Image 1 (cartoon, rainbow, N blue to C red):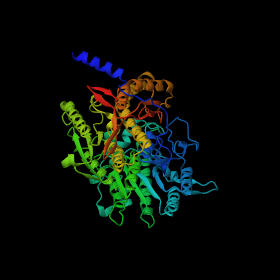
Image 2: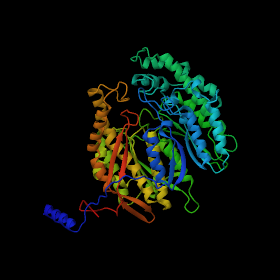
Image 3: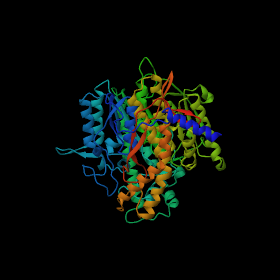
Image 4: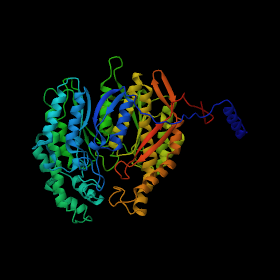
Length: 616
């Protein structure tokens, strides 16, 4: 009887012209070109620093302008060099590019100091005094700190300028696999040295010189080098990797970077820089009293506050999400007098491990990372009474009990479904670092409307994941509260969500694992750099495209049948249109991450579900 009824229902829907509506995806630009212009110098050319920042900016009504990619591109060993003949960005031309934007009347800036001063994140980890000096075309040279001071002086002349400067605390390893000969075992050795405990300085002893001394001094006078050597005794020296030489370069690089970060704070402390904001991110870290600890304390002491006590500078976990945070906070700060920004949020954890770091690369428990980001995004925590909060945040942690994995994510899915039924805007964070395998993602795809989420993140470490999810979620929540969302903003927002979900659900846990095995076993190559040794990159590209086409089907169909909020008061929804993925690519010719184009069809009237079937 049930089968007959469903057959009759399907026939009726077909005869009446109803059924799941799918508009054909078509290429278009996310923005309409009418947004407020933001001049942006990216950290480097990875998707999280380029495409996804563009999507987020356009979802908030900004028009992002960037220099040519060659000027901020990072090239791994053996790969084609940039036009300046190096593996890193062209600093002199980037400084000039920013001045050119000012000359055109631009008044909003987001500038990566790691790119402007060092040529990108990777090159910022390998600094010598000579690397911080640039030759002048007419002869002579200039230190990058002088270029920066001159640039900031020019930008400070216009009191209407809002300038976000993005800086970082160097990670525990200064080498990058696939760059200047470094391999994974070299990275592991250097990280072991950086993670060795150091003597902790009292606040009254926090000077640069004292911090530098602790690079070589552990608690009780212990030698960090000996500790790392014992821990990594299996990594032997060779013609390339001489641990003592590498450690000496590491210390030199950290000193240069810390001194320049201190110089930035000195410049901003001078009158006339009240419109500048400094956001410092902590690159992958450790729970131990590692080499970063005194650096963090020193830089934290130099953060500014305004006359009203409001923070002007911040130091937060995470680096790859810095631009997301800056774009979102810029938008939140520009609330108009009619609809001032205020946000309440509640976070609920599932899995039981929120009181500890999510992985070896975090130095804070999830709860502390979340609290710091709440403060940054001006979210008032109402977790004790979560139903009273405007923004709901659901976080899946690592399981405290291995045998309860399914129970943890099932409970989260039920909470998500309850929020959906009650129209509570929701951010979803997977902080489990892959400990649930693909089971959690498969259950979400089967049982939830993925396209209804305000934002999702789960690809990287928890510190970055938190900043990514809350940047997109808090900003979208604020935009919906203001009631000024346009179709082009909706389309850009949809791309941010699709990008996060597809890369985490489909690439990270399915296609990437297949590629790692294929590259190592079938091609005898290195997944961290397809050029050294030089392998069949066309074959890898084909494997990527075939894998993604197979893995993404269910997720895309879920998105196409989802509705999403376009207004909160009154609550209104639209339906997703067709969604297609094109032009898969490896931005750095390595398997770690991919880029892709996301094509959307026209949005529709809300999709409806009758007896488990989507109808229009």
